[in-house]
Image 1 (tube, rainbow, N blue to C red):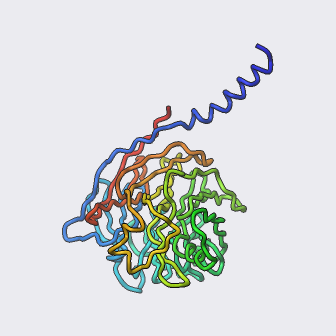
Image 2: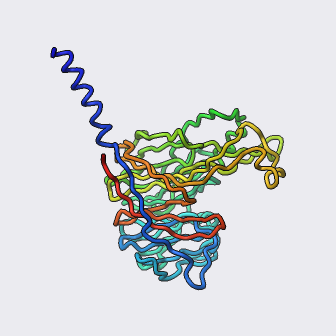
Image 3: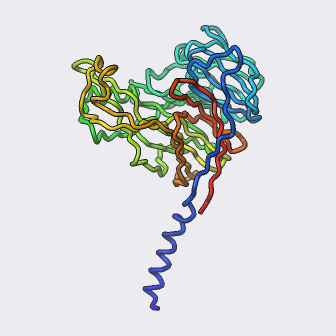
Length: 364
């Protein structure tokens, strides 16, 4: 065997090692399911978070309240109430709990964050100097007390802004470049895409670096340094990321349901998990549909195949470890200290429950 052949074999081995190291299977098993407690009706659950004791906080943005359950799923108390005063909500859209168990509730209508301590007692409100006008909004706080809010900032053409602990704007992060591969949009319609599908979801890695995942399209970035550097990411080509498109007026269109990222979170200080809610459908995205025809004639234009959830698992360097898929309508939102992933499930009749799954990464 000559030297050239040996070198070729060594190169082949080096190329195969990363593939073997990250060739994994993701096993998910249902741990439990929380139904509506007595005398409580889940109206529109939108977010779930956990604290260091694995207590479960569930945000209902229609009832304007947060429901607290212990680790065993037993209801404890309600946090907050409707209103505009301290500790009150008008449209809460996001909940975040930091390592000290401080609770942050982003209130879209009041354009502020309501902060509670680890005992769920109100601490203070923070009003922001600038606030996103549309898109997927989320709140997160770093170890220095700075606040990050995602959403569409039209004037800044941004999907994410950083604020001080008192609400002063510090920085905007730019939108990704979107390629419209299947639809020939006008500039006006591209603006509507940004308004409807902008924003994103955030988490910190084990080193405190901020990871940001856009709602649409599938783009994940690491914002740990001064530069907005992208990490490696995987595009699920087998998923349909094109939104339904309906004509509403001569100069505008309405964007309906689409596959989109729901949440990104850190599992066991090891894996970055990107949660995606998928709408699988067939049809012609270029065909505009009159809004009045949607209720009775939708099947003429598009056919729903199924709705399901996908979880993509990454290393801290952005290498895809594996993917799990559940054939249920679940919005996975967070994880706890015992490698369990929590989400909101909605059945065909619209009944909502909180589900918790055990996650196991099996390396081949």
